[in-house]
Image (tube, rainbow, N blue to C red; front, side, top):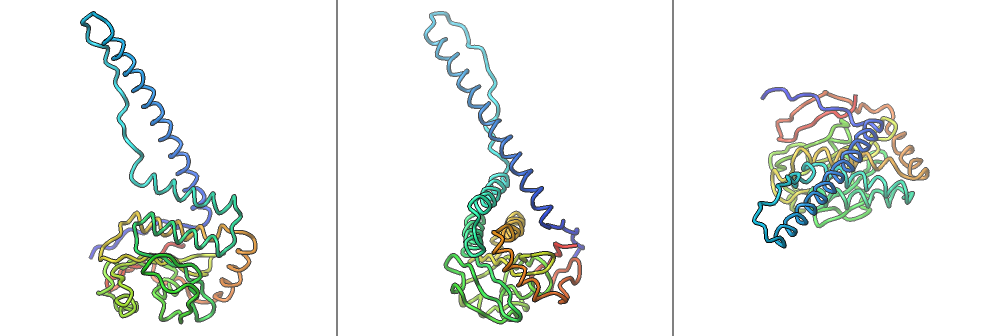
Length: 264
């Protein structure tokens, strides 16, 4: 299998720049739609004037701009920007921000569920859950048994297009919950892994590469919470200092789960 190109790093500074660019792009698309509306209105006025006239003259042709909506991913980026704005303006605490992120990422990716696990030592606590495929809210499992275990240990985003082929995740748990594919993105704080965002799908190969990027960006929003929430993330990240979180830069496992490094 040909080696895949290295993916860009999504640190907090890169995330801010990307979201700012998404906002500018969204504003540009809104301006285009407004111009299209005005041109169409002008065309309608010309046609109405011609119909009222007894002269048989073809109305002047006014070319309206193509009614092209924003590119496929622009709407998603706009929703991510909106989520970030909601977290910052309302000064959401960590639990509220995680619940919002889980709900929005499930909706944006048309997933069957999503959850955010925070790591405390060798345990992972599912602090935010949504959807039918998610675990029980507040449930605590050993990190080694969590579906995000590979992500936590490697600090890589994990793609599992078909969990039936995986030897690195709990396939029995996936079968029990009806999960057939999933994405897992690490939640970073100050360069350390503090948790992970899991997104579940009920069919194999159900997500796109854009859904993977969405998961990474939404996981990054968890750190943009209130000072009290950041303090909690700092405590979690501090417990993991010294662990080897950076392994092979780009690897595809034989189990069918692809792992990619998203940090430098």
